[in-house]
Every structure is written in C-alpha cells, then in structure tokens.
Image (cartoon, rainbow, N blue to C red; front, side):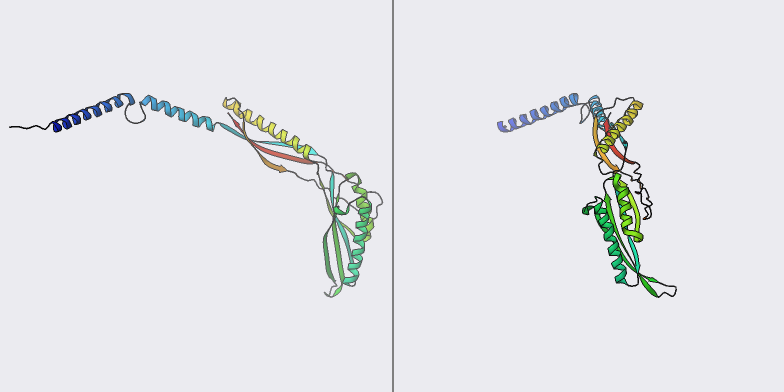
Length: 260
C-alpha cells in the first residue's frame, strides 16, 4: 500500500511556482531594459551625450589679461644728502660734521620740512693715509633723508640746506614719487577691465560664439615705475635748484574669465 505525504506535495508545488515566477521576471526585465545594465543602446547614448554636453558647457571659458596705464605728475621728492669733513683727530672731525649736519637740519626745518620727515640715514668715520700708509687724520660723513612734500618749494629747500652745510655738504641723489594715486589707480583699473573685455570679445567673435558673463576677476598687482631726476645742487648758486618732476606711469593688470 502506497502512502503519500500531503506536506511533500505542497512543497514541490511551491518550488515549481517560484521558479516560473523568476523566469518570467527575468524575461520581462530583458525586454524592457535592453542588453544589460544602463538600459537600451539609445538610452545609454542619450545619457552619454548629456554628460558630454555638460562637460563642454563647463569648460567653455575665455581667460584674458587686461592692462590699464595712466600717467600722473609726482608730488613728492625724497632728498638724500649729508656732510663730509676731515680733521686731524676723530674728535675734531666728528665735531665739525655734527655742527654741519645740525645746520642742514635746521635749514630744512626753517623751510617748512617737519621733523618727522627728516631721518638720519648714515654715519661713517674712516682714517686717512698718506703715501707711506701712515694715518694723517680722519674723515667723517653724516647723511640724512628728507621727504619734501611740496614740489614747488623743494628747489629752495634743497638750495638752503646745501648752503647751510657749506663746503662740507654732499647730495647723494633724489627720487620723485606719486603719493596720492587713488584716483589714478581707479582709472587704470577701469582701463584694464575694458581692455580685457575687448580682447575676450575678439576671441569670442573668432569662435563664432557670443561673449558671456564674467566668471571671475583677479588683480595681478600694480607696477609703479618711478622716474628719477638728478639735481646739480651747489652752494655757490643763490637761486633755487630747478626741479623737473616729469611724469610717472601707473600700470594695472587684471585677469578676467568670461563664459562663452
């Protein structure tokens, strides 16, 4: 007599049904999704095109450097001068030099140069020798730097200082500078931006693309070349030293990135 277990039949039936469902789900997924992950070939191609277009758009930039240059008249003069004397002893030479530099400083002060604009810049004491290399005396030099903020008065200030120092006076040089340059720099920056936009527009036109908005701007720094004039200051002349301030150029460079 054969005996069948109802529980065994139910387990077998459930297994067959599960296998059938899995086969159907796989067939349906294959018909809808194409061959493998990513969908149909056309869907994958569209996705790739979108990615490429996004990368191309992000890379569409024009980077240019613009320069703006303006010219101004220096309004400040830096004077480097001093005194140099010789004496038989260190003490005598130093005493004479001290007296001469005090006269120079007092002259500058009396001509309107503030004490804060006069600065000691050097002191040197050296022995002097004869042909036998024996010490015959000592030379002392003292120097100062004076900032003269009124070009129109600088000539008479220099002349008076040299006369105060007498034959011991020395002039090492002068330099001219532009101190109030805020308005000039603003104009130079505007010129630099305009120059950058013109260059970028030319590149965009050559590419056949419209020039887009500004993405970024960076200042590359300011170049301020200073013209220096040598002055022949002598104690013998009673007229003010002629001052020719000339001109000074201020140049600004900016790097601008435009969208295309």
